[in-house]
Image (cartoon, rainbow, N blue to C red; front, side, top):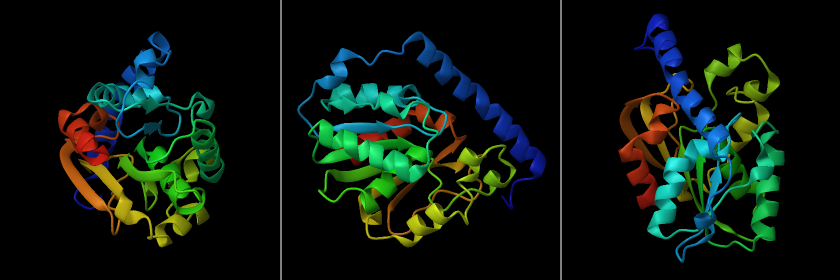
Length: 224
């Protein structure tokens, strides 16, 4: 955040929340998973939203991937994704087993990317996950977690044991694509993943990035 003043940071942070609100309202209006998501002959995709998010935050991307021919799976059992990262990763793997999915591409936002890396690193002994495409995921934690009002958000502190263990686990990084904004007010420390494929896009925002055409195209290419 060295090049960004506290005032600029606060303005950008507040300006991004209307984007999150639009996704929340969309979820309220269109909660049901489209029947078409089950159709497709290409690589299966599993959607992993961020904390306090439903799959609807990634719906524009999911719909485009499904239109390309990928079956898209959401996991309603995650709820608003408030559970601890290890427990969530185990729950996702159980769903992969129950649905008989192999060669999976995880497409994730924010916390979803951390869950995805945990799954690939520690919870996927049968090799069901092929790759992870993470959008705005704090792989090295976020200093903003220091002012978080609850434990669910403070789990993203850079020194949190889960975050540090995942940062040290680099074996799966080559199978991860990290896509992130040029500045993310929720993750001012950045989303660069050592040894992964890193794609920085000229957009500001943690939620605004999800509707950018360039992001959708980057996700489609990485899934393929």
